Image (cartoon, rainbow, N blue to C red; front, side):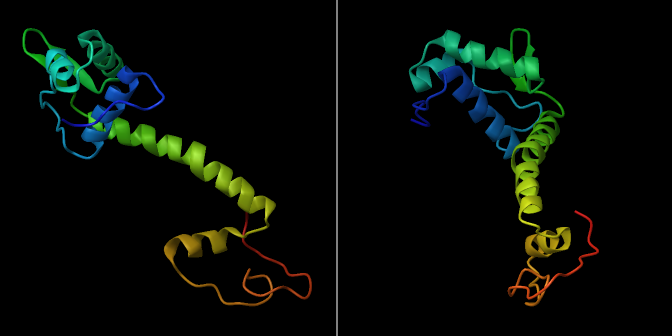
Length: 142
């Protein structure tokens, strides 16, 4: 039957998130028609007004648009719009707190970059490998 909307958030938000995920994954392409509110209601056994509320939110976001008499379609540029939003949230919600924590732990930027790129760091003073026996200077800005 498809996904069951049993998450803690309202069903209309779960529907909107499902459609966003399909657009991001390329399962729904630009200009492709999405299921109608009636089809959603029948397929997932929900109230058509719930699906309509999800669609209205996606129209407001610029992810979907309505063709009068034909239904809802994925808007041109919807995937890029969603990618930009997800990237911005990633930097704000994931990376910024991680970098703040790294700063508290005195982890140099170069060590973070090397870790992300999968390059091993040599063990020794000031490298994060072995315990340091004395003060070190790290020219890498944080």
